[in-house]
Length: 154
Image (cartoon, rainbow, N blue to C red; front, side, top):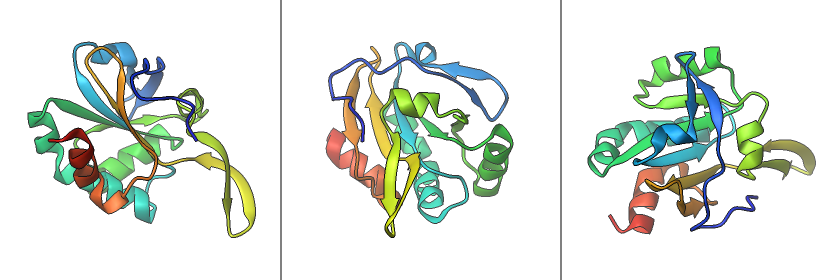
């Protein structure tokens, strides 16, 4: 799990989004945003989480937050995922898992007695100065917005 703590600077990142453009931490100077890491497009929990953020996207914008999803999927897969689920926010293709590694959410996992390397579903709330204000390690995929609203006192 992540080595990062709340009230620390968010690690710098740079990645390619579904439009083929580069997005980086400095693009969000002066803005609050939710950076959420998820294992894979088109899987049950990941789809539910993305749909919850999409359903509540206007709420987040009204509260001054942008949303960015990050997974190791390709740009092409992100395009299909966004189109199928009408996702209004950007998805970063972290194919080499560099961003996930810098945020401490890529590592050894266990399931059904099998060990493998993968993404730990984790959400970071980052403020206008690039400071991590909240880290959610046990994400409720169907209730991501409600979980964050409670944590942030919104």
